[in-house]
Amino acid sequence: AQKVTQAQTEISVVEKEDVTLDCVYETRDTTYYLFWYKQPPSGELVFLIRRNSFDEQNEISGRYSWNFQKSTSSFNFTITASQVVDSAVYFCALRRMRRTSGSRLTFGEGTQLTVNP
Amino acid sequence: SAVISQKPSRDICQRGTSLTIQCQVDSQVTMMFWYRQQPGQSLTLIATANQGSEATYESGFVIDKFPISRPNLTFSTLTVSNMSPEDSSIYLCSAEFGSGAGEQYFGPGTRLTVT
Image (cartoon, rainbow over the protein chains, first blue to last red):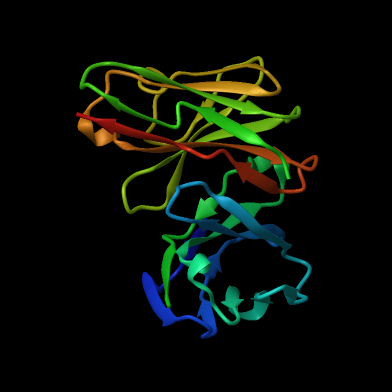
């Protein structure tokens, strides 16, 4: 069975603060994908990043960075110098890499991030 | 990234009626999916829409309640049948791109309210 846990239900920060969203996952598979999605108040789900289980390099994209640690089954997401437009619900998700097992995304419960001016 | 559109974007429906949601992708894809997001909750997969065959439903979802069509590689529909207020949710379609490389993109969602 696969499971994704986002322990932080809500986070509130002031603009320009750095914030880290935690994601811990469970899977018996040795190969898998991890994802982060952003859901702003408008409701659409915006793809942010996909990480393969065999690639533990951290990634940076502008103000966003991701820390993948297989040893602790974590895939944390940091926003540097947060902005009001970052306010959204952020979902971490897991998917098996083997196509024969289907392509279902297992989502965490989401973290509501509010960035106050 | 791909463009995925859904119609309608939102609707308010009466109990006992049915609503069909359309999902259009701007390129051919092998895998299309339908998810439900109940208010304040995470996303739950309803079914995988298979082109040319019956959809594959997840536990707790049945074809009579959520019939799905997938007539070609760019289009799918989800019908929410005999609606009750508990069906009030956002319904999202998604498509997998990259020849199984794992990237799934989502449509903008259909916000359904059942009164």
